[in-house]
Length: 107
Image (cartoon, rainbow, N blue to C red; front, top):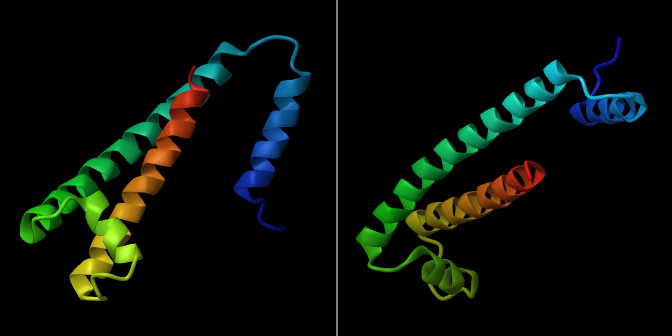
């Protein structure tokens, strides 16, 4: 038996929902709970990463967005802290994008 990807499962679910004549309350509650759980997980990750950004900002006396712009322009070099700081900024940006998508789907 082959493994079914998450995307394949979502496609099957989408087809299933499309043929339903009404809304299954239990099904809707389960989906809401799953989406809310993911939002909470992402918000916790975001908080942890924001704490790391604050530490970098205090250490180097520079806001993360200003740092990231200068780093991307090649003005700061490739010190280990800068690579980690840059990665942390990118992770926070990705989480923010994911949260926007999930929260827009709730409206």
